[in-house]
Image (cartoon, rainbow, N blue to C red):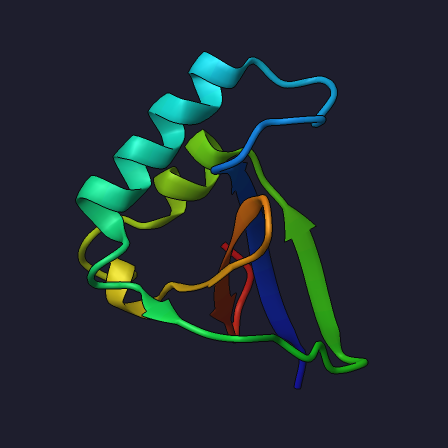
Length: 95
């Protein structure tokens, strides 16, 4: 059986990060920290199995996966890395 891992990241520290707009990242971080971080589960690391399909999403695309009924922010995991939040959702069927 395969798993499906949906992944996004947002930068909480934008120093020396190329290709992003700091104000846009700040808005995403504020949104995550204010609205979604509390119900999500903090993790230290994630190990991907060989039968896991990983899909990288934008923050907006990732938020759209969390419908509040079938999938809630309580199903979401995140790791706070040095410069970014890595945010994950693992399902047993594709979304």
